[in-house]
Image (tube, rainbow, N blue to C red):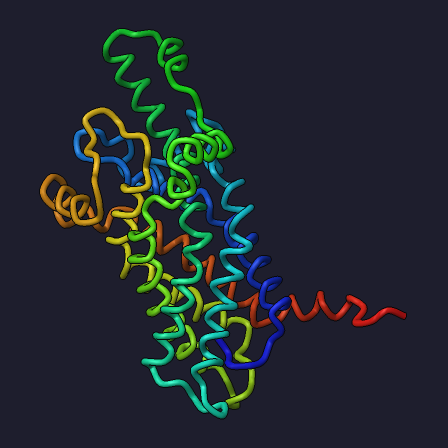
Length: 317
C-alpha cells in the first residue's frame, strides 16, 4: 500500500467496495476450493475444479455455486476494510519521517493486518464453509443411498440444508461465542503469513510502475501487482488453509477423519492422504485471491472512498 494519508472512513469504504465486487466475481471458485479440500481419499466426489462446478450446477442449479455467498457478502466489507486499513495504519506507524520502510517493517505491518482481520474472518469462514460443503455431503449421501438401494427421496429427507442463522444459533447455544471462533489458531496460522508475504510483495511490485516516488502507479500495474502478490501468497499458505478448512468443518462424510487440533489434523492428512493433500485447492485459491486482491488494490488506489466522501457535506449549511 502506498504510504499516503487517507482518512479512515475512506479506507473503510474502499476496502468494503473492493471486497463486495471481488467476492461476487470469484465465489464459485472459492466454493470449489472448499469442497476439493474437504474430500478425503475413498470419498472423492470431484476430480477437479471444473468437475466440481459442473456437478454443482447439475445437482443444485446455478445458484448452488453461491451457497454461503450471503455470509461472505455481509462480512467481507468489515473484513477487507480492517485488513487494508490496518496495514496502512501499521505502515504509517512504523515509518519515520516518510522514509521508505525496510522489508522487515513491511512484513511486521502485514503481520499486524493479518492478526486484526481474524476478528471477522474466523466466524465468516466458519459459517461459509458449512454452507459451501453442505452440497458435497448431500451428494455423497445420495450416492451411497442409491448404491444401497434406498430411494433418493429418503436421502433428501434425511438431510436438511443448513442456514447461517441456524448454525449460528446452535453454536451460540451449545458453545457460546467460542463456537463461532473454532479454528481461530489455524486462521491465524494462514492469515498472518499470508499478509506478511502479500503486502510487502505488492508494495514493491507496485512501485515498479511509479514514475516518481510519490506518484501513483498506472491502473494496470496496481491490478497486476495485486494479482501476482495475491496468488503467490495464497499458494504459499495453502497447507494452512487446508488444515483450517478441515478443522472448521462441523459435518463429515462417511468414513472421513475427525481432528482434535492443528497438529492432529496435519498428522492425519500426511499419513492417510500424503503430502500432496496439503496442496488441494491451491490453484483454486490462487484463482480466487488473484482477482480478488487485484480488484481490491485498484479500487483502493483509485480512491473511490475519497470520491464518495467528497460528495458529502463537511458541515451544515
